[in-house]
Amino acid sequence: MAGYFKLVDAHDGGFRVKLTAPDGTLVAVSTFYASKEEAIAGIELIREIAGTGPVVDHSRDDVPGTSAIFGGIQLLEESGDALRRKA
Image 1: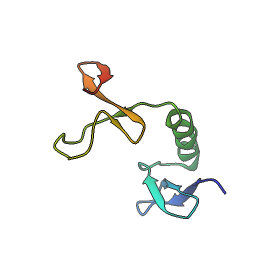
Image 2: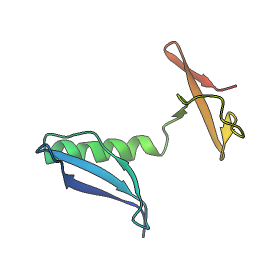
Image 3: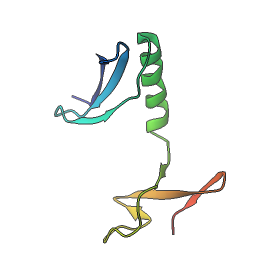
Image 4: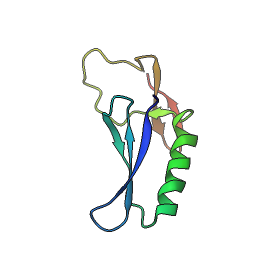
């Protein structure tokens, strides 16, 4: 079975989306959506972006053993209004 999206009630009255791995591990939780329609649109947007979106690294650089290519993923950093490969 593939990972899946769970549409759940939010504590504050709206909805949230939980991205769940095939083994049931919680991977991510969305922002608040006021309606179910907005949450479903959010799922569609996540599906569109997730496969092709770049990884922009905002983390600290002092972590030993990490580099600009980590686990086969090219990390990018913001440079003004543009993205560039992390050195």
